[in-house]
Image (cartoon, rainbow, N blue to C red; front, side, top):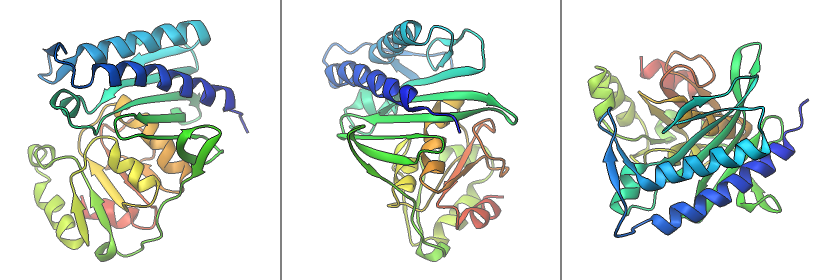
Length: 263
């Protein structure tokens, strides 16, 4: 089995660098905000963090490719770092502390490239989660101060806590009725949004979550953390991995019913 310890250590260094920038610019009065062609916002902090991490990776892993939300893909090879500098930019620019830097390493395997290292750092929440393939999933302040996490053992939908981001994406894809039916069947629903539902699935405080439209940088880090915590992470089509353009994550026990309910 491959050893990703050095890559995980590097991911922590990258996350430390990102946190220093994002926290300093969070709620800054001179934060500059632009609108991207897809009409989503981007702040100067998003761009600064991605540039910083790309420079770090160029020094530490010059042979590896890099894909980021703001600056696209560079390099070629069987290993690719995937960066979302600020997942939850709309929260970030409004002063809501639920946002994180997502860092993943993907490797080419028999089923295409799949995430093997995942790092989610949410400094305004004082939280960090990470995982490496075959080594388990953890949360804590760093590698030496960490607790292992695992998914819940809730096995009935009526006992499940269901987390999501918003209703509009489901409505745009004409899946809102199925989504609402699912939510009515669950014990509890909350729209925490972005990275957070996946981390709560991984640590067992939420049992299921789903989003109808996502990019690879939204999913790669979350995927390996959920799976290493004992859960399942697929597209709405049930295919494992991060290439389906959407995501369904669960403790594993509820996954089949979750997919069936969402159609």
